[in-house]
Amino acid sequence: MSYYVQGILILAMYNAIAVVGLSIFTGFTGLMSLGHAAFIAIGAYTAAICTKLYGISFIPALLLGGLMAGLVSLVIGIPTLRAKLRSDYFTIATLGFGEAIRVLLENLPITQGARGLPGLYPHTTFPVVLTVFVIVVFVCKNFVFSRYGRMAIAVREDFVAAEMAGINLFNIRLRSLFFSAVCAGIAGGFQAHYLTYIQPSMFTGVQSTLLTASVVAGGMGSLTGPIIAALVFAAIPEVLRVASMWRLVAYGAILVAIMVFRPQGIFGYKEFTFKGAWHALKHLYEKLSGKKAAGQGGTKA
Amino acid sequence: MQMLMQTLVTGLAVGGIYALMAVGYSLIFSILNFSNFAYGGIIMLGSYMGFYSLTLLKVPFAAALIISMLGAALLSFLNERIAYSSLRKRHAPSLYFMISAMGTSIFLENMVYATIGSDYNAYPAIFKQSSVSIFGSTIGKLDLFAIIFSLIAIYIMNYFIQHTRTGIAIRAASYDSEVSQINGVNLSAVIGLVFVLAGLLAGVSGVFLGMKYMAYPTMGWITNKAYISAVIGGLGSLPGAVTGGLILGVLESLVSVYVSSLLRDVFSFTFLIVLLLVMPSGLFGKYLEEKV
Image (cartoon, rainbow over all chains, first blue to last red; front, side):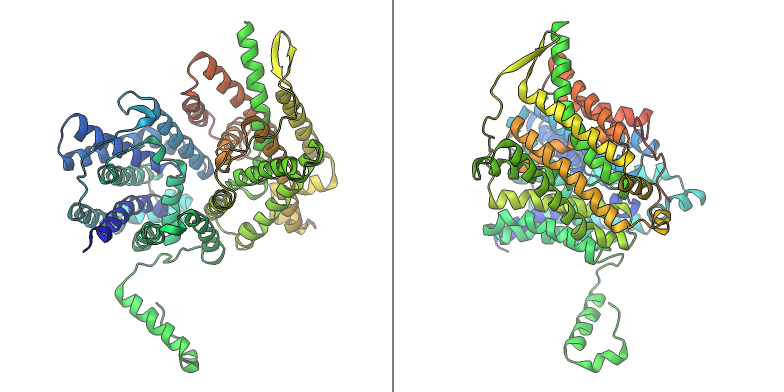
């Protein structure tokens, strides 16, 4: 595999790690965060400071980054989730939180302010990212099909009914937030050691928005949908380098179009399977090849 | 004491613009019950319209203000018709509205970035760099004009909503859209009107922001302050939005002077979160719990 393709895949996969984590939070509890770039930033800075200043080896540093992001998520999560803020208020609180973290990174001595941390060792290699990616997806899948995952889905669908059925809203939401922050932190560690430098300006509200956008575009309540969206969103700008200025314009338009025409996201609650894809293709072929399929009421993909 | 007065006056001047933005934003929230993140993009485009009317068309300031108000109102109206009206008819959850709004905001901001460019455009000097002194503290003429005009605009808006027939329809719709429809309120028209009103305010705030800080594609981030002001005051409450805007402006200017201008934003966000913990619906919030 060429070096270039590997680069794109690494980028796409660490993005997907953050997105799949966020899909556990937004997609399965229905709360929207506009501050997840802050968790990526915390993971990136923690991992970078560990390897650069304290000489800790990469994998423990990565895990420390994830853990740190998770702990910080509790700082914002415990008060806001316990207060059961309206979802709009929660979203704006996360937006404010994300900006506050960025301002702090710009002003703390250990993060070297706006200059950032240059000269990190490029630890992020293809096999490492792939392994972690597979592990994260596996854990997410198990989470969704566990008791907690079922409870999270109940909370998303109707939190009043879920609470009446005895589900502790605060517990479920906080767990999902913690988990998503850990994933974001790990993705941050990878990003830092892939680009070999980090600056606070990399972790803006736009990045938070794009993470949420991938989850929504892929389908809230699906795991494979957001992963595919993240891979596509990360790969497209690399392939279309020329059009990079227009890529965010397209993102915006796509988001609106999805909400207007297909609000359940590309995959909705469904998961991508090869069998499903085969049926969808067959259905499409029958549709295109004439009226033959019309009477048979085609297979559902 | 002198310094404190000066800080308060500066804070109120900034707070006036925050209040203006927060009112438009809160107005939309009160009727559709979601955070219109696209509002920042509309304000930004309003600011560009004002800038180009002044520099390319060379119209007088009052005309530029009107052009940008009308332009922003039109954009705001189109924004509703394209991005929200179909969601509204489907009774989609507010999360979907927010995402659609976010998409619009990303779209508008980057559209400007890709077509006009990322330059900072300074408005031509309309008010000479002179200042007047009130109670021994000085205030720039621009700031003074901005705060007076903001307060007048907010007052007119409030009068319209409280005392006219259409205003009553808007309030009825924001209270219960189903029942108001049964009583003969044309909901679609009322919502369109609310977006036009919010757009008018966006045009004014865009021009003032442009005069104060220049016009550039990412100037929409300043509207984060409007969201925060509106949440402090309680989403959906117009007096709350004004109070929240003024409080935030004064708080920021106090922190800049007495603590650190770098940490200003950290303080405002911390203040927001602490306030929400104490008063989960803001100062004058209407709804504590989400509508079921």
